[in-house]
Structures are given as structure tokens and as C-alpha cells.
Amino acid sequence: MTLEFSLTGTKLTARSGILELMDDLGRAMTEQPDMLMLGGGNPAAVPAIQTLWQTRMRALIDEGAAFDRMLGNYDPPQGNPRFIRALANLLRKSFQWDVQPENIAVTNGGQSAFFFLFNLLAGRFANGRTRKILLPLAPEYIGYADQGIDPGMFVACQPEITWPDGPDARLFKYRIDFAAVEAALATEDIAAIAVSRPTNPTGNVLTDDEIQRLSDLAKSHNIPLIIDNAYGAPFPGVIFTDARPYWAPHVIMTLSLSKLGLPGTRTAVVIGPEQISSAVTGMTAIAGLANGNIGQQLVLPLVESGEILELGPRHLCPFYAEKSQQAQAWVREFFTAAGVDWALHVSEGAFFHWLWLRGLGITTRELYHRLKARNVLIVPGEYFFFGLRDEWSHCHECLRLNFSQPAAVVREGLRIIADEAAQATTKV
Ligand SMILES: Cc1ncc(COP(=O)(O)O)c(C=O)c1O
Image (cartoon, rainbow, N blue to C red; front, side, top):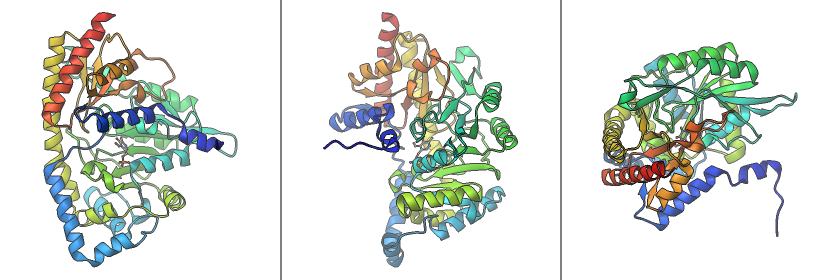
């Protein structure tokens, strides 16, 4: 029997490029255990954090009644009331943000939060308008790319490329081109501005000034600014630079437990205007009745005590910053020796390096296939530039590398990538 799917069904089941790539990565990993995995988005196994969650789970089991309640009851669709109260208190006390429980909605992970938010705010409207999400700086998180139920959901802006220590240092940083952002706001029907901070894939952290300017622009256009803090502040806090956590009444902030080492609990939080949090609550009820409550119960005492804010600075940042430094040194060593014209985006947070191979003679998709044949997995850069209106050769010259795997894996992976890049560059 062949069934016909609705337009929505067709959109959501399309073999998107990212689905195929993720399938391909997953299959390669399970079928070839010796694969060098620099491709996925899993957080690293950080021993102190693993011990913490094991201890918390044991404590819950020992409490007995709390454990039974956690497994045996549905939470309200907004999330666990005690967890929500504790989080609102923590944000008010620590950052003086006027966040009340009514401003918060829990979701089954940040990915679900973005599916709800984008389709709530953008797409086709009753009066014939089609509104869009503005991404002020491409490249941006691959996971957003196929989330719009209506087509053409995103408009993205090409960034300025800056060299904070001069070009010889081979470290670049994307900056928002505000003229391009203002032009997009003037010419397109924009429903919201969205950024990830730190950015997946680049490890860029938008500066306080950039965030303030985006916030001012959003406010003056009467639209929300969505800040995706999957890696950021206040938690998990995988940020290596000084960056102020930011919220304002027209800001929708998302936080997730995934990069605190709990991706399996599928828990995230949306903090925004009450109209948004109650809409997200309604969407959770329709799509899934309630949220998984294990993550909320695991972190509850740490939210009540404020200790959750310490996990990043105390455990995650030192761990990932060291891995980042190590990988940067290997990139410098191997790519310089291979005679490849390389540059890295400055590593300001998250756990990816964004490598720019200038004059690479092939697309990074082709490089991905060649590397896979040599047992190395990376994510080709092309997937992160959705929403751009103009062709940009830079899109075919960048790769995302996860540096959180064991040192031997990252080092050998980088050595092979440098070798393969050198062959691709000299062949053309
Ligand atoms: C920038 C960004 N946003 C959101 C997510 C979604 O994460 P989760 O659904 O696990 O909360 C991810 C996952 O890697 C991400 O990198």
C-alpha cells in the first residue's frame, strides 16, 4: 500500500539533506567502530558531571516517593511547577531579570522548542502575509534549517569577516553586518530575529554590543529576539570569553540541559513573554501531553541552590577550553605542514572548530565523502548557510569539527583531514 501524505506530512518527512547526513554519520559510526568521529554534536563524557548525575539519580531512588512520583505522573504541560518556580527565582536573584513562572515553559529539548517557536511566529498568516525568521549571521545551526512547515522560513545575512590578531594569526571572527540586517528588516516581513550564542557551528560568541544592537532593532520593529543558549549562559555556560547573559521582556531565551550532559532527558526551557510561554505550553499539550520530567527532577536541587550556574565555570569550561586549545595546536601543526591555506574561527564557546580551507578545489561535501572513505567523519559547511539569498563561495570552503572526542581521535582525524585537503587543493 502506498499512502499519500498531506502537505505538512510531506514537508516533515522529506529526505532533507541534514537527515540524510545524520543517518549517514550514525550508520558509519555503528558499522565502523574505528571511525574517527569529528562530526556529531554529542557532548563529551566529562567525568565530574557524569558522577554528579549518577549521584543525583541514586538520591532520587533512595527518596523512594519522589522517584515514584517522577516516573508515575504526568507533569502539567508547562513543566514541573516546583522546577519552574525555582528557575524563575534563580534568574530574578542572580540577574535581576523580571522573570515570573508565567514567563517559563519547559519543552522536550531545545529542538522541539524551536519547532514550536518558528512555526508559531513565522509562515503563512490568515491575511495572506508570509512572515519569516531573520538569522542575522550565517552560518547558523543546521537543526533549524528544515523546521519550517511553510516553505522559505528563513532569511539569513552574510557576516563580515574580521581578523582580530591580523591575518597572519589565521584566526578570524564573524561579525554581524548590521547594514545587511537593517536592509532585511526593511524589505522582508520579519516575525523574529534568531541567533545561537555560542553559535553552532562556529564557536562564535556574539558580543554584548552585537546582542544589544539586535535587541534594540527587534524592539524597534516590535518583534522578539530569540537567543538560543544551548551552549551558553546562564547554563550550561560553555563560553570561554566574557559575555553577559542577556534577557529583556521582548527576548525569548532558550536553555537546555543537553550540554550539561543530559541530552537523553530531552529537557529545555523557553523563557519569554507570557503570550509565548503559554502558546508553547499549549503546543506541548497538543503534541505530547507533557514533558519528560526526569531532567527537571535531576537538576531541581541545583536550580534551588544556584549550583547549576557553577557547573559551566567549574567543570565544563576548563574541560572544553583545554580540548579546544589542543585541537587548535594540531590544526596549526598539520595544516601548515601540509601547505594548505587554512584559517580557524576564534573558539569562544561550544565544542566545535570551524575550519576555513581557502582555495579548496572541491566542495566540503565532496571532502566529506573522501574523508569518510579514510574513516574520518566531519560535517560539511554547506548545510549551515540556509536562508542566504546570494551564492557565496565561502560556503563551500568551511567544515565543522567536533573537538570533544579523546585526544588521540581528534589528533589523528586532523592529520588525515590536512592530508586530504592538501590533495584536493593541489589537484585543481
Ligand atoms: C544551537 C543548538 N540549538 C539547539 C539544539 C538542540 O538541543 P536539544 O534539543 O538537545 O536541547 C542544539 C543541539 O545540539 C544546538 O546545537
